[in-house]
Image (tube, protein in one colour):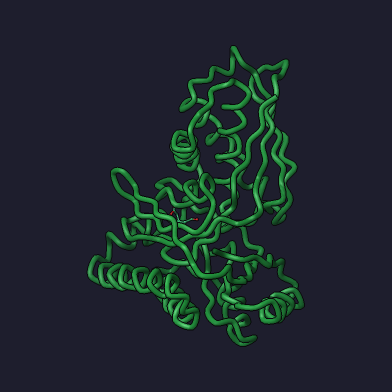
Amino acid sequence: MGKGHGFGKVIMFGEHFVVHGVPGIASATSLSTEAIVKKFKGPGLNVIDNRKGTEGYTQSKKEQQKESLEYTLKAMSIDLKKNPMEITLGGDLPVFSGIGASAASAVAIARAISDEFRMNLSDERINEIAYEAEKAYAGNPSGIDNTAATYGGLIWFMRGAPSKMERLKIKNPVEIVMGNSGVVADTKEVVAGVAERKQKNPQKYDKIFKDAEELVHKARKSLERFDLKTVGELMNENQKLLQEIEVSGKELDFLVKLARDKGAWGAKLTGGGVGGCMVALTPRKELQEKVASAMEKEGFKVLRMKIG
Ligand code: MEV
């Protein structure tokens, strides 16, 4: 039997822009997905998915999960005909869109297979395999999700050849709230939609992408100075840019407004958008609780977490 885990993530700055080479800032969640791999009578592959989350998520991602597993096995040179296996997914990370559930499972599965077959793969190699697996879910992923899922912590990520990851240090961990819109989104479609609109409207999009790049550098400096007021303001500005590239949604905008009305220092969608999750900066437990419970009162699922 082989075992592995992968962290969830919350993108604080730069989703979508990061696909096109703008840096992004993400934090791994303390919640993670666990995978167990066992030998199986066969034929082929049996997947048991015990993860909890948004209704319809597992069903709507079934085909992408199958494709993702094919990419994983190919990258790991495993022949299912010779090695039929059963993969069980669990852990405390809920499968919401926007929380990096696909990357967390990709990393967990790669680690569990490596463990089962005594491959002893490095984190770097696990991250590469998970990147391949992510292509099934995101089409043209930047790599930020699988990198956060592999290494954990608060990271600065820039896509490139090779991509660059730096760890960010902040003075103290900070409370955040993640609110789930309850809408399952197809990241692949949303990512492709941005690329299409960017190509059709180069002038408009070049300006927005330039603003996003300036913003993420300011955000890094503010985080490192522990200037949370500015971090919050920049999250609000980031949300405006995400609305301009048309990746927000009715439920997300509602939750973002609700969080700000309840005193959050900043709020924006996080991850692929359209549906999925938003994140609110809520320093101190009392504010975190106030914002989280207001969302719960409206019937939304929330996670109370810390970054840094
Ligand atoms: C999805 O969590 C983040 C996106 O920027 C896609 C990616 O970076 O691969 C939308």
